Amino acid sequence: MSEQKTKTGTFHVIYLIESPVGTAPIIEFNLIVNTVSKRITGSATLRGPGIDADDEIRGEYHFQTTMPHKTSIMANLTGYAYFQPIGLPAPNLKASLLLTDDWQSGKAVYEYLENGHWVKVEGSVRKLEIATV
View 1: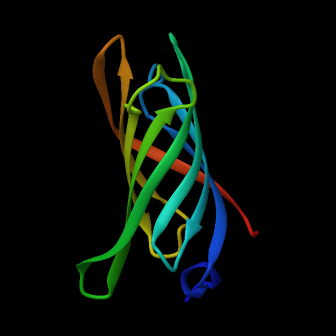
View 2 (view 1 turned 180 degrees about the horizontal axis):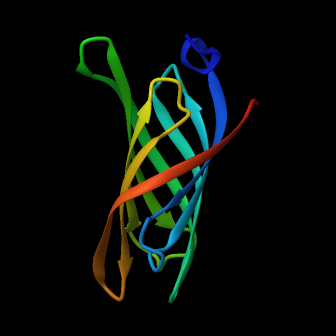
């Protein structure tokens, strides 16, 4: 069992999400995971053709068993632009990460808001770098 999986409290993780489609935006998540509340907070940078956005990230995660002895982590994240008009914050990024139980690898599906329309990118592959707080 990995140290990340058994640790309680918080830890820091950085994920780079790239799509096999070269024209899809790349997302870098810089996250703090709270293992007690199962909440995730942090920031995201979305870069690609015609898009350049920095977001505040809020989310949560849970463990799920898909096959006997196969546990995954499902993280659902929502991004909000740092600078928005006055009023209720509106999301401009939604991401679901299906991670291995040690937080080391997985897949991602994300949607981002572009010109008032949601654009969905499926089958994105995630690379990561982990640092301990």
